[in-house]
Image 1 (cartoon, rainbow, N blue to C red):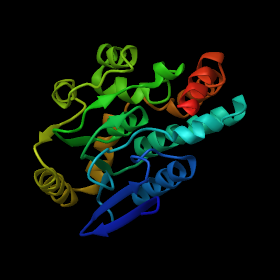
Image 2: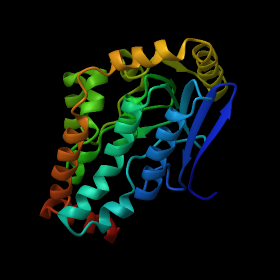
Image 3: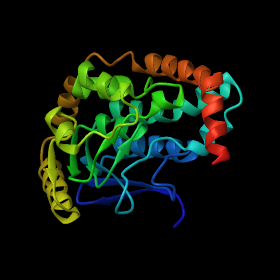
Image 4: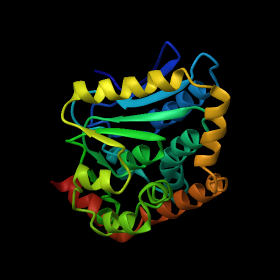
Length: 251
């Protein structure tokens, strides 16, 4: 299968689905299309609620494309690389429709940022999470605000300081990242669809106003996430990260 982002509309529900062959890791072109598609769905009067999901049966999202990370050759290109996830998070934040997340499997790095930026997240029992950035010599700077907003500084810092450790879905549920957990994909999809159908019948104006309330205090994120992307763009050129990437290439 080729990489894609697609939007399907059915009975007021807009389903945004992304897929890449490398464990749903996201290169820059797919991130741009994902941000644009979420914005498009948010502006479509036919859509009352949005579901965000990834293709395949395993990993939900392995974060940013490592191939593109290895290709960064300047601070400017580094910032551009990290702005990919910043733009998706801001698109989700500004979207006037509720976004329901559907996680069928693991989320790493930027994938947790996506899970933290939806308004309600359903996950399977296979949806372990890991913030791996520090091991690469950078940090979860861009996705950090979204994750901290959802689980708190303590839980976010625990994950950030243990970049080699996967955290159990039950832990993520207890911390508030996941609303509910399910044993299999069938039960997961049933729950996602049931909530989406309920929300699609509610007053769109009331939901839009309620979403504004949910995201109060994040109005400065356009600037904040751009600053964080610039920070990451510089660090990715550090000797530590270059050595890490070289060792990865030599494997």
